[in-house]
Amino acid sequence: MNILLSGGASDLATVLTPQLLARGDHPVRIDIRQPQVAGGTVIQGSILDRPLLQKAMSEVDVVVHIAAWHGIHEVTGQKDGFDFWDLNATGTFNIFETAMRSGVKQILHISTTSIYDGDGYYRQTKLIAEEIAQTFAARHNVRLVILRPRAFIPAWNSAVYGSFIEWANWFVKGAVHIDDFARAVLLALDFLADPAKPTPLVADIDGAYDYTAAQLANWDVGGPGSTFRATYPEFAELAEAAGLDISRRPDILARTEAQTLLGYEPHYSLANLLAELAERRTATD
Image 1 (cartoon, rainbow, N blue to C red):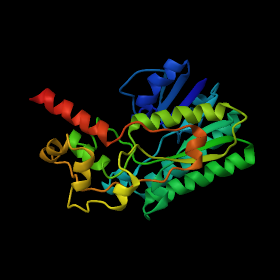
Image 2 (image 1 turned 180 degrees about the horizontal axis):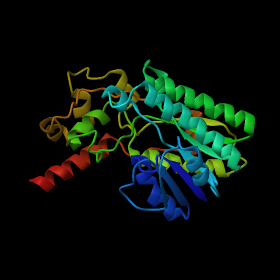
Image 3 (image 1 turned 90 degrees about the vertical axis):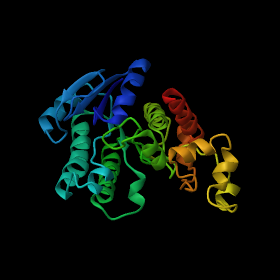
Image 4 (image 1 turned 135 degrees about the vertical axis):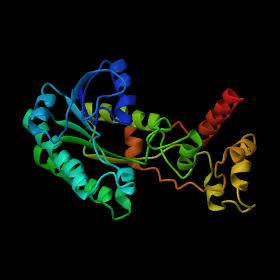
């Protein structure tokens, strides 16, 4: 399949591109930036440029709409309300309207769990983007999947995280690893391609967790960090020495029927993070 990736130079597109190529798909990547990793057809430009988007959409079978300004751009003041509206709302409308005019009937829209709380520009414009997606799906018989991931910025994004441990302290709060989310995207593409599968489908996407329900309900009853030490005794000393907040209780999303329909099972948990931390420490010793 020819698959348009809006936000084609994004972290997610960087991970997806080689995986799509390995499956025999051809990614068409549109972004204002040149991607750091080559692969597929690259179109440098904005989804706000309607003629360019129309050209990019030609001969496309399915769209993965990634492009958006995110919460990090709002918190740091990099983007203002106009920027968020232009890309997240108008850009989403352009994607769906152009897809309709081009005869593209399969769209995977990347949303966010941030729609559940907060009152910032990011949340509001992503809510509007979902409304646009649902409206087009209903009016134009578009097969639609909306994925709402936890934040999935990778440790290797040095523009956001200055070190692995900085990323790790964010991850322990509750997050999904970008590799797991990329897996969810591939499953969603397969779901869209099967006409027997019911759409629209909306699915929250969370990561993997090692703690039991009982541990979460009785978090750190033995003192700060006690639940972590009981679960990862071989890593406790290393984690504390590295500056990891081992008393942090993760916020975990409940599994939904939509995840089951997709067949999504996350792989990367805190155990994997700790093993990676140990490898990094060994490499620097």
